Picture (cartoon, rainbow, N blue to C red):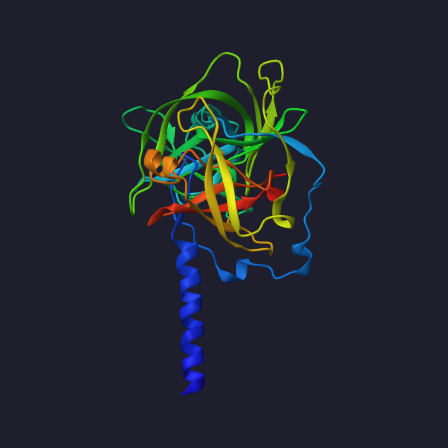
Length: 352
């Protein structure tokens, strides 16, 4: 009986952990999805306890809401019609057609129509593996053009929050990858730009429903800088320092997993799209081990002003820097679906 009680208690604890991990969503306004994390994703390595950052390094603190846009490396299949060709599936990233690089949708369309009903050789990436498929386009009776029976996209844009900027203009933002919402596929960056963003309003978070910062990307002829990559811990790039000034930005030391501890901290965010302000939070749980996901610690918003404005953490705040003991320790990544005052953060170690 005693062993049975111990087993049931242990099972209860495991279920509680899984429930916490699975019911959260990323808070970049590029997409919404539920995370699904296996406990096996956590690598219990002693080496993971060591920080990989230079604690003497200083960066400029972010918190500004910005617009990001990039052209993907290849085109992503987001849907397929009933007449779609076999061999190509939703989530596939088409890289080449008959040996020619597919850098955008126009190239794919042009090559299909030059095929004149002949089979074409596609090289594509599916779940991280490169494979080849021979397919035969069909002619659309209305447009008289050859098609594969798929819907695809070659670019992504949205708003998010800047986390940090280095003295040379290199930056990190978002804290989690940008994925296509229908397929959850992460697109590599071919070219990309960062722009100013205007916040038009706030949709407050409610229980079971994510809120958001409603904004508009101010795309101009001269962007603020370039986006270089889209990775597990956010996007990175470099500002054009002739277009953007950081002289008045707060310079801050790096902390991360080597300094973080349960207790009071602040997130820095621009809810109105103009002024970056600190908002008080409490870090309630940390995980010092490495993981394959951006969720490394749990925090609770205790700032009454922020709760009044947004209901807690909302989409668009992803990447908001988190400061504790005057050190940059991480960034906001996810919000709990059923409690917007709670969220996940990722260590700044990962982003640096």
